Image (cartoon, rainbow, N blue to C red):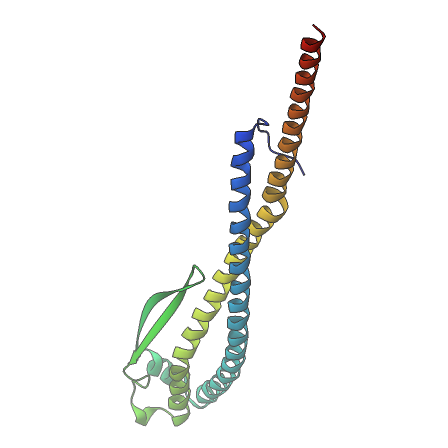
Length: 207
């Protein structure tokens, strides 16, 4: 591991030791954050998988109902029935802090009725299909929020992992190597100084 390019003196040694303590503390905090993020990520991923599978099954049933209604209705009548919707959907977006990751929280308010046409000119199968689609909207939005949160957390986990690896495999080892190098240099200087003092003392005694 390459050491840092610094002057081998006691002041630099003291400064590096303090930086090493801070780096180790930061590494531990980031490691704990990474572990907590991964745990939260896996929980949300499992919940998202279950919700997606449920919604895919229910959407398939909704499409079957709609295909049945379309097969039983003239295209012009179907187009006229679906031209203007009476249903309204108000979406409010919030944010929730999950381990320093701001994940979206969507609140849905539905109003009106998806059935906004004359009942005498349409079949009941179309009413059923539209009502089933409308009932799925809150859960679809909840799935979108959950999957967006999963993506954001995955990005944050990757960033945190890179920082942890940089501290663990680059910065901390370079501090340790530099401290060892400075300590060896200072020991050499101390031995050299002691040797010179002993020689000076011998010269003084001989005179």
